[in-house]
Each structure stands twice: as C-alpha cells, then as structure tokens.
Image (cartoon, rainbow, N blue to C red; front, side):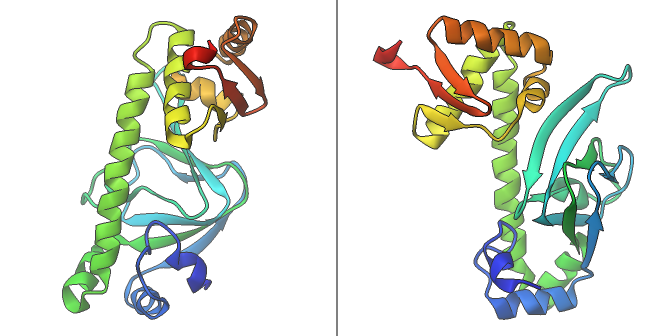
Length: 221
C-alpha cells in the first residue's frame, strides 16, 4: 500500500502513515480492480463502503425510465464516491457508477469506521474529511443546477465557463469533461452543443482546442 499517496488524498488528508496503517488494519477494507466500462454499482444496490480511487476514474450516471442518460460527474484518482449512501443505513443508491478506464478502488466500510472512531479515535479524522468532501459535493451539485437553469445552450455554456474561469483564475481554462460528458452534464444534445460552441467561436466569445478554452470576458468582449 502506498501510504504516501493515501496521505495526500481527500479521505486521508492530515493522517500520518502510522494512523493510516492502523485504520486499514481496524477497518474492513478491501481493494478491487475493474476493467473499463465495468459497473461498480447499479441503481437500487445497498452501499456500505466509501470508495477511494487508487488509479483510473469512474463516471456517475443517471438513466431515466425512457433511457435518457445524464452524467452527474467523473471521479478521478485520489477522490472518493458513494460516501453519502454509505453513511445512511439501507439507503439504495440512486445512480449507476461505471469505470471510464481500468480502475483500482479501495473500499472502506463506513459502519466499521464509526465503530473504530469510537474505540480509538483515529477514524475521527476520516469522518471529518468525509464531512468536508460531502459539503464540497453539495456545492458542486448546486452549481450544476445553476448551470442547467438557462433555457438556451449558450446560456448554460456561459454559466459553466464562468464558473471554471473563476475557479481556475484564468481565461485560459482546461475543463475535465470531453464533449459528450459536457453535453450530458449540461443536459443537452452533443451535436447541438458542438454547433453552439462553433457559433460562440464565430461570435468572438471564445476559442478552443479539444477541452482547452480561451474565454473572452470583460473588456475583451
């Protein structure tokens, strides 16, 4: 186990190597490897583990009753997922989780984490980190709702790019989504999204290459 890597993840942030070793011994953890496009969880399953990605990435999906798919997010190396469901006993997961590539995941049993925290205290840091991550994800979810509020594709794109410019602190941004993922994230068709990006480029609002964008803002418009 790479304890140096784990100590830098969102889940084990602030923990020493010795604390991590102790927690992994006490907790009911396991490591699993998955192939590309393999489902880790399907809607309706009961989740008891918080999942930390050791390598690779996963995609959080929602498919409605008529088969329309929306991508709610992509989780990458060092980040966690399923923590909200794992913290609520017998709460079925409401999304599908699928790998984007070959992926290795550390599963940590949340009920065992609560017991371990009460018995020796080491798990308290993990619980604090879980709370921070959950709060951040709630903010991100609120932003996605905000981005999808506009009735036009251009309005949704401008909202999303505005957030990225603010977060990255530059007009030259690199987004973590490809075209299909961006279309799914904003709730629009990929073809329509690409067409609108072309129009925005022609209108002098931005330039782009793949997932790298220069957004014209302020006096530069």
